[in-house]
Image 1: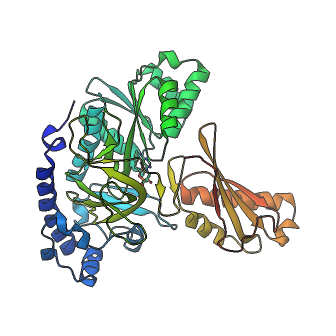
Image 2: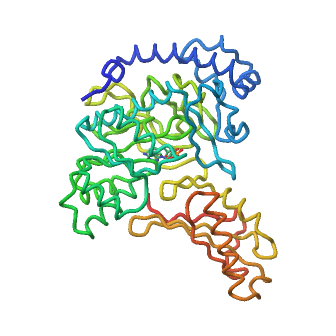
Image 3: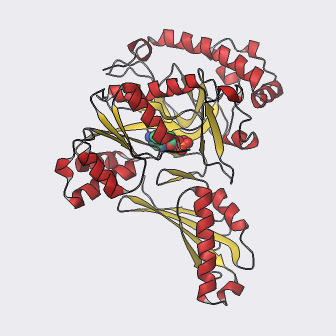
Length: 433
Ligand code: DLL
């Protein structure tokens, strides 16, 4: 089933025309309303009149995550605050989060993007969709929620956590679809097995994203929950979930090109790469009102496939992101920058810790583990165990409130973290992806 065949199956030439028209309008809007873009275009010697269509896209300057920090919280919004009806936020590279805003039309567009996918994977009004992404500033919960509502399905707004209750709800309420991170899906599958209720589940499909996952994980989730597992991609700066979605063919995620123009660039030179190349994904939003972006550097590494898809949709498909061109980690679905951890540690007294630390991420029983080893000072080392435990507790709490996720903090002996002769190896990510 196709929710909006007129848009989803638009011949590519027409799609390109539509993108061109919308791009010209959007560039004019951001130039007039957003200082950051106006300054950057002026610096590059480009006026909105120089942009006649999609063929001129690469003339426009890029935008970056750091712009959201520099214009925190609302400086990149293109409409007055009275027209913003919702904000969401995500981790920035420092203590400040990045904030995005949506108008009423933006929320409608977002809901349709998610509903398109739910329709494609066979869901409809008769389905009962359990949303187990976190609700709140994270886009996952509300993003999936409003997509399922748009579809007319029955939504169970569970949010994340409380696994036993999640499973009981799935069973008792007869959920037919589940939306959560793939690692949580696997954990739910295992717990259902352990509780012996797998055969009571009525699930048929799962919509999973917000973190990288492998085909191997997909097979395991499908086997454990007895469902078809579909991939959904997105990022707060563009929309949240639903920027790109798998269809029933499960052969790449369709980027909804009537709203977003994707490009693949060389992350080092910024050059647009030839069709089919692997590089950094860049997005321009052409219909968003509240928080439009022009050539936003996602830092996700992937490729685009313009071959026609067997489902009949004409929109380009992106391959699963294989990594990032920055140091962002995704731990249990939460974005974590090592610089955020460093900032917390810098604010702990030098009498207690040294600047040497290491972040260790692993995946044990399909759940991410997150440990932060911090070298204590000679002074603290000489102190009693209680003082050491108190400092450990303070750092743990500070990290939790900054990152929104718990880390196991270990104060380790002075000089026990290996020194490096070049760049310090701060992050050890043992997960195989
Ligand atoms: O993770 C939005 C989302 C919620 C997508 C629920 C899908 C489902 P952020 O927290 O801003 O937004 O994180 C965005 O997560 O740049 C990717 O690196 C990564 N990511 C998101 N979806 C996928 C996916 C949400 N399907 C960052 N596969 C992005 C791999 C993904 N990585």
